[in-house]
Structure formats: C-alpha cells, structure tokens
Length: 171
Image (cartoon, rainbow, N blue to C red; front, side, top):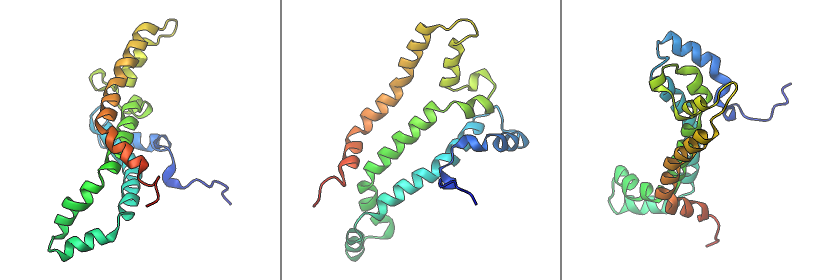
C-alpha cells in the first residue's frame, strides 16, 4: 500500500526529466525553443486551469442567466461578463506562471545546450566557477533579472489585490 498522500498532478516537473529528454531527442527537438516551450506549457496548464476554473465556478450564475435572458449570446456572455470579472484570477495566473518560467533552471539546463538558447538562470551560472565566483557580476545579474517580474507585478498589482481580497469580506 502506498503511503504517499500527494496527488500525482502535484508532482514537480523534474520527475519527468529523463522521459522528456528521450522524447525530445526522438522528436529532434533538443536545442530548440520548443524543447523549453512544450514542457513549460504542459506543466503549467493543470494548475492554471484548476485555478481559473475554481474562480469561474464561484461566479454567480444569475449574472449569466440575466445576460442570456436579455438576449446576449453565449460568446457575448463570456466576453462581456465572465472575462471582465475574471481579470483578477487571470492576473494572478499570469504572474505565478511567469515567475515559474522565469526562474526555472533544471529543464533549461538539460534540454538546451546552445549558448544562444540558454535561459537567464543558466547564463547567471557562468559567473560561478570551480575556484572563483564573480559575486559582483552575479549580484548585478540577479538585480537585472528581477526587473521584468517586478514590472509584471506593477502592471497587475491592482488586479492581484482585488483577487486576494475578493473572499475576505462577507457581503
């Protein structure tokens, strides 16, 4: 009997590293952008789908019913009512997945060997040597590497705050 209580879908992407490497090699996709894009999308979709689905399930059905009664099509209901109400969860999902992809190290290290395709975390490791580490260059690179994520958070901060406080008040 297995005593592991974690569901299978919560496993880290690194569990599938070896089978993914063999699959990508068989498809001749190593050292391409697709070698990074496909695993990132595949491992991000389940969490993002469950996050957005749970949020949309909490939306009151009276809104969509009223729009349908008023003559709005199903696509109109989605684009005029559901999508604008879902901006907070879409912003949170965007920031979470962007941080995951931006900071991911191991998949990029294994699947890409060409210098021009390496990701930022792999490039920052060039400052670490066997006998010497250039701490100044490493610190500067890390500071520069945080700028896009900070900008992304600043862009979505209002939606993130709305999403975090949505269930906080009774009403």
